Image (cartoon, rainbow, N blue to C red; front, side, top):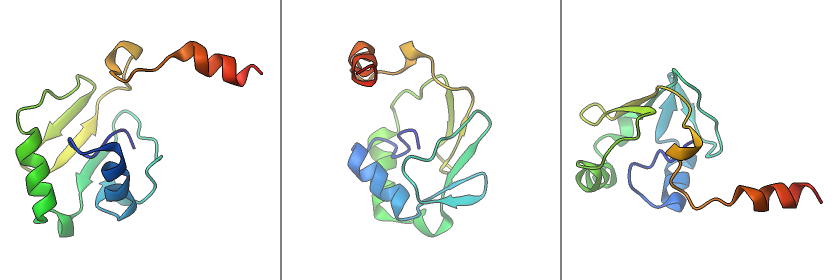
Amino acid sequence: MHRMGFGTSRDESRQLVTHGHFFVNGRRVTIPSYLVKPGDEIRVAESSRKSPRFADILDITGSKVVPKWLEVDQENLTGKVLTLPDREDVDLPIQEHLIVELYSK
Protein backbone atom coordinates (compact mmCIF):
# COMPACT_ATOMS: atom_id res chain seq x y z
CA MET A 1 0.00 0.00 0.00
CA HIS A 2 1.10 3.49 -0.60
CA ARG A 3 2.24 4.89 2.81
CA MET A 4 -0.98 4.31 4.60
CA GLY A 5 0.44 4.76 8.06
CA PHE A 6 -0.72 8.38 8.40
CA GLY A 7 2.59 9.78 9.58
CA THR A 8 4.28 6.72 11.01
CA SER A 9 7.58 5.29 9.93
CA ARG A 10 7.57 3.12 6.83
CA ASP A 11 8.34 0.05 8.98
CA GLU A 12 5.46 0.77 11.35
CA SER A 13 3.13 1.40 8.41
CA ARG A 14 4.02 -1.99 6.96
CA GLN A 15 3.43 -3.61 10.36
CA LEU A 16 0.00 -1.96 10.71
CA VAL A 17 -0.99 -3.36 7.32
CA THR A 18 0.42 -6.81 8.09
CA HIS A 19 -1.60 -6.94 11.30
CA GLY A 20 -4.81 -6.32 9.39
CA HIS A 21 -5.64 -2.78 10.53
CA PHE A 22 -6.77 -1.66 7.03
CA PHE A 23 -9.49 -2.51 4.53
CA VAL A 24 -9.44 -1.62 0.83
CA ASN A 25 -12.84 -1.59 -0.85
CA GLY A 26 -14.29 -3.51 2.10
CA ARG A 27 -11.70 -6.30 2.08
CA ARG A 28 -9.03 -6.70 4.76
CA VAL A 29 -5.54 -6.17 3.36
CA THR A 30 -2.51 -7.73 5.07
CA ILE A 31 0.07 -7.38 2.30
CA PRO A 32 2.12 -4.15 2.59
CA SER A 33 2.98 -4.22 -1.12
CA TYR A 34 -0.72 -4.28 -2.09
CA LEU A 35 -1.19 -1.85 -4.97
CA VAL A 36 -4.07 0.57 -4.73
CA LYS A 37 -5.59 2.19 -7.79
CA PRO A 38 -7.73 5.26 -8.45
CA GLY A 39 -11.15 4.87 -6.91
CA ASP A 40 -10.01 2.52 -4.14
CA GLU A 41 -11.42 3.33 -0.71
CA ILE A 42 -9.23 2.66 2.30
CA ARG A 43 -10.44 2.55 5.89
CA VAL A 44 -9.09 1.64 9.29
CA ALA A 45 -10.65 -1.54 10.68
CA GLU A 46 -13.49 -0.95 13.15
CA SER A 47 -11.64 -2.95 15.80
CA SER A 48 -8.59 -0.67 15.42
CA ARG A 49 -10.34 2.71 15.51
CA LYS A 50 -10.20 3.09 19.29
CA SER A 51 -6.57 2.00 19.50
CA PRO A 52 -4.37 4.52 21.33
CA ARG A 53 -1.85 4.24 18.48
CA PHE A 54 -4.35 5.49 15.91
CA ALA A 55 -5.30 8.36 18.25
CA ASP A 56 -1.59 9.25 18.46
CA ILE A 57 -1.24 9.08 14.69
CA LEU A 58 -4.21 11.42 14.22
CA ASP A 59 -2.77 13.88 16.75
CA ILE A 60 0.57 13.91 14.94
CA THR A 61 -0.85 14.22 11.43
CA GLY A 62 -3.96 16.34 11.98
CA SER A 63 -2.45 19.44 10.38
CA LYS A 64 -0.36 17.75 7.67
CA VAL A 65 -1.12 18.50 4.04
CA VAL A 66 -2.76 15.62 2.19
CA PRO A 67 -1.26 14.90 -1.25
CA LYS A 68 -3.50 16.07 -4.10
CA TRP A 69 -3.91 12.50 -5.35
CA LEU A 70 -5.55 11.38 -2.08
CA GLU A 71 -8.75 12.29 -0.26
CA VAL A 72 -8.76 11.81 3.52
CA ASP A 73 -11.58 11.85 6.07
CA GLN A 74 -9.75 11.91 9.40
CA GLU A 75 -12.96 11.86 11.42
CA ASN A 76 -14.01 8.52 9.90
CA LEU A 77 -10.47 7.18 9.38
CA THR A 78 -11.07 6.66 5.68
CA GLY A 79 -9.39 7.71 2.49
CA LYS A 80 -9.74 7.43 -1.24
CA VAL A 81 -7.18 7.24 -4.02
CA LEU A 82 -8.22 9.92 -6.52
CA THR A 83 -5.44 9.38 -9.06
CA LEU A 84 -2.04 7.77 -9.12
CA PRO A 85 0.70 10.22 -8.15
CA ASP A 86 2.78 11.88 -10.85
CA ARG A 87 6.56 11.70 -10.49
CA GLU A 88 6.71 15.25 -9.13
CA ASP A 89 4.20 14.24 -6.42
CA VAL A 90 6.61 11.66 -4.97
CA ASP A 91 8.85 13.29 -2.40
CA LEU A 92 11.21 10.36 -1.91
CA PRO A 93 14.85 10.72 -2.96
CA ILE A 94 14.74 8.32 -5.91
CA GLN A 95 17.42 8.24 -8.56
CA GLU A 96 15.69 6.61 -11.50
CA HIS A 97 18.88 6.28 -13.52
CA LEU A 98 20.29 3.91 -10.87
CA ILE A 99 17.21 1.69 -11.18
CA VAL A 100 17.57 1.63 -14.96
CA GLU A 101 21.28 0.79 -14.66
CA LEU A 102 20.56 -2.06 -12.25
CA TYR A 103 17.96 -3.68 -14.50
CA SER A 104 19.90 -3.17 -17.70
CA LYS A 105 22.82 -5.34 -16.51
